[in-house]
Length: 149
Image (tube, rainbow, N blue to C red; front, top):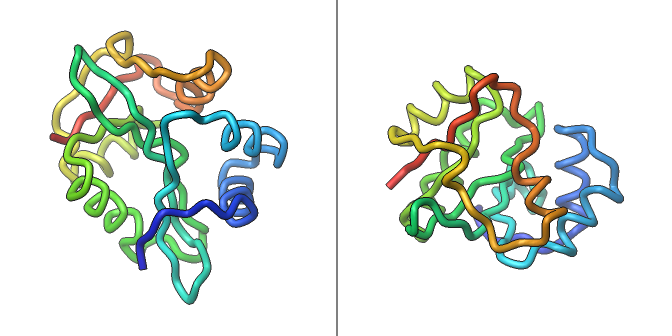
C-alpha cells in the first residue's frame, strides 16, 4: 500500500538503516522541510520503502524532487521503489532527482527519467541548511539532475 507518511519514528528507522545518518540529523531535516512530504510503501503496515517529494524549480518549471529514496535491504527487488515513482508521477506529473551513482542512473532511466539538466538550474525554496541536505549524497564527479516529465 502506498500512502504519505508522517510517522517520524518509521521514517527515521528506515532512513538511518539505509543511509546511516543520526536520528538528530534526520529529525532536523523532517522538522525543517517547508515544502515537501514523505511518500511510503507499506507492507503489513510497516514502512519498507520511501522517498521525500520536495517542491523545486528547474528553469522556471515546477517539479517534485525525489530525495532520500530508500528501501530496507530485505525488501529490495520487489518493485516497491518503482511503484512509488509511478504513483508520484501519476499524481505530481513532473519529477526530478540527483542520482547518487552510475548504477542509479541506469535504474532511473529504466523508470522514465530520460531528460537531464545542469545541477545549477535546480532551485529550492528551503532554508540553506535543508538545501545542503538536498544536494548531498551523490558520488558522481559531474552530478546531473534527471527529469521525468
